[in-house]
Image 1 (cartoon, rainbow, N blue to C red):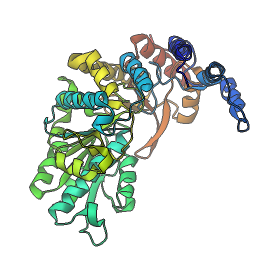
Image 2: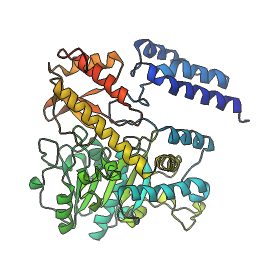
Image 3: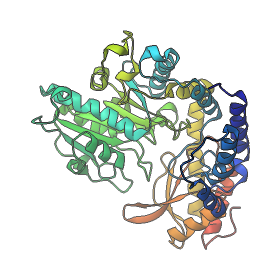
Image 4: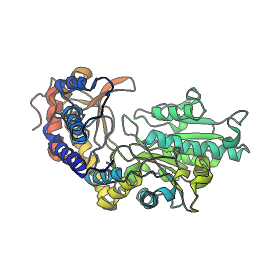
Length: 455
């Protein structure tokens, strides 16, 4: 089948038109756009269709039915908007159709992972000797890092979990905040350590793990801490946890899906004191870093623990003798994520990334301050880019529905520490000052009190 340049140009033109118009539409799809999706419910086609007609249908029915997450007015689910440079690079690499498993299969894919790995470690201030794994999301990054932790702790106990599994293995214990992200529990289930075996540690009023409530730690303990609570953005007292863990021989894993990138900002870095002392880290690229979906990275201080846990060998894989991408991730076949990371960091540099993270923080503070002045109850101290707030009348569901129907921004409800609240997450590089002002107008107009917007 010949490659049709006109078809790819058509796709690019439609994508550009979508991005050009995304700020002019409601953030959530309209009821009409949702209803039109029924047109996709057709029987299995007996015969093929023309490519240009397929694109036209996809654009006509699909584009209006998207949530406008790649716009500066989306403040839900801690989702960043894709920066234009890595998004364009992503499109180019889709055409390359590279499988970044063995280095020999994609020399460019492996090279860009090598470079992006070094740059990520530099940005975060982590040792260059750490191993990295470019995966789908922070949940998979935590699974990957915790696989290395399980292997390392059992190896120290004289058990080869890769060869002998968990039957009759020494028992490991996982300790974490009672407010740990659910992907950690899922990872424990996948690892055979048991979702219900997690030892939960109480949290304080901001959602931080209470060090005084930690159980005794030992060399068979994994402690999971958070750099960015999913509701409050609060950061666990990692320095104290690491000190206790180091004395006991325990492993500390940081779920930094939301907040780890604050390490790239000289101004915000002190908030994460002690985080670099941990043994492993997980963070998203498609949140605050604004990479296109799906992008995350797992980082492990003990490189051998990761590469040995993930190692795969077969005669046809042709080991190059260099870093093999397939020795760092659960999957053998995977897309070329390293190009997304390389393009974003190359486009912004260290200063640009710091400025992007700091802007999100400043915008979050602005919204929180205005809401408080308008009589809203802001439940959390603004640490990074998260706000949990209750409108003046306390009717979270009704106010949230009015905000989303208004279309000027999108926020979501949550439950946190026994209270129903609206969660507002500023994670997009596309959010402008006007977006913030318009969002505040929408938020305040949706609440019965102060319905005249901002001054």
